[in-house]
Amino acid sequence: MNKFIIKHITFPLWEFGAGRKRLQVLKELEKSQHWPKEKLVELQNNRLKALIGHAYNNVPYYHELFKKKKLKPSDIRTVADLYKIPILTKDIIADNFDKLKAKNIQKYQPKYYSTGGTSGRHLHFYNSQATFDAHMAAAYRGWRWSGWDFGEKYAYVWGASMDLKNESTIKKKIKTFFTENRLLIQALMFTDESLKYDCERLFKFNPDYIITYPSSLVVIVKYMKSKGIIIKVKGVITSAEKLFPWQRKLFEDFFSCRVYDDYGGRESSIRSTQCEQCGGYHISVENGVLETIRNGKNVIGVPGKVLLTEFHNYAMPLIRYENTDVVTLTDKQCKCGRALPMLKNVQGRVSDIFVTADGKYIPAEYFMVAFLEFTGKYYQVIQEKKNEIVIKIVKGRHFKKSNLDEIEKTMRKWLGDAIRIKIEFVEDIPLTSQGKRRYFISKVPLEF
Ligand SMILES: [Zn+2]
Image 1 (cartoon, rainbow, N blue to C red):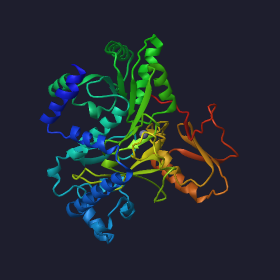
Image 2 (cartoon, rainbow, N blue to C red):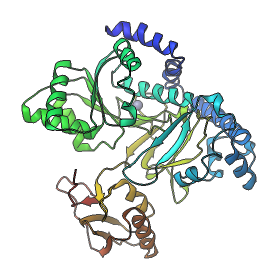
Image 3 (cartoon, rainbow, N blue to C red):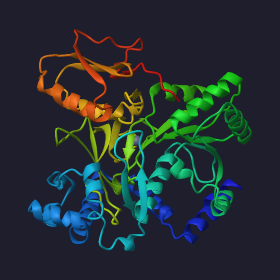
Image 4 (cartoon, protein in one colour):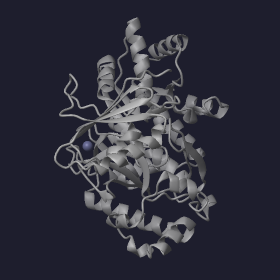
């Protein structure tokens, strides 16, 4: 299908027919990205006040919480007042699931979701249709910074089975045919045969853009390199996983293009996508508040735990939801002129994988939380054997021994009691040959 027809006719028509508001939200977001900071702050405060009022009046969990804390909705007038509301953890959500549903939930076309992980507690929740529309609109806005546009010829190399479950329905096939110029590669599992088949399809399709899971694309690029296949594209957009610098370099060299990383979970419409000019991640603050905290206090410029307050999910409002990622906010202004605040770095979702004594795989991102309040100078966690973890510590001047108990307790939560945790105090921890500091190293091979 012709790019122009998709962009201006079939895609908007399909969206209109489906009763979705994504394109309308996108239009608003494309305007507000050029607003001055004050106007963005005003929008945030207005949306926050509306959400708080709704939560207090319609969500039993928040009504009770506000009463208990002697808070009135009028106490939360701006983003700066958010600290008054306690943090919402995955455990609290699981324990108060029914109470977190709005009494008038049906009004918001709720959709049930659950996020899986390699470990830890699964999160179950409801999203409103408005959140889903805003989520996609924010994604489209960010992707368009890379030059991608509707109707563009692109390959979608995706690994989340949840997103792919409807792909084989007739309706979805018709929609894709008329509204997208897309090649789907279901990167759930690779075999030699599937790789040969997928790489041939990719070569024939000759996409202009690739939207992908970094780890899936690594497998494909390595295969194509080994077979001498060459493809050039205009841009690669990575999402859903931590993008490592070596992965970025591999893609940029192989496809002769720039890589744009996109960060944001499916539980909210707050996304951050890399700017085409400075490489920082602009946050879709029109959709919510992204805070980072350390020791319960808001921080900027240093890595902190992410708290999300999304504005559109009236079905099940999550206020100051802790998603267990670690990122660094910056107060720097971008030269592109957009006043949207930025993330300097996404530290979370680091997928150096550790293996528990009983064979479970744990990404190192879970351990990063254990070290957020680290008082020493440097640390390094090494898994030498399946049943042994060594934590090397360079003490420095401010090290407190009590810190170790907390670290061990948090690590045990993930690794179980069967693993031995050894602490070693050392003078220094050498950098890698590229001058990088590695915090987590697993030497146990993965059995998949
Ligand atoms: Zn920018």
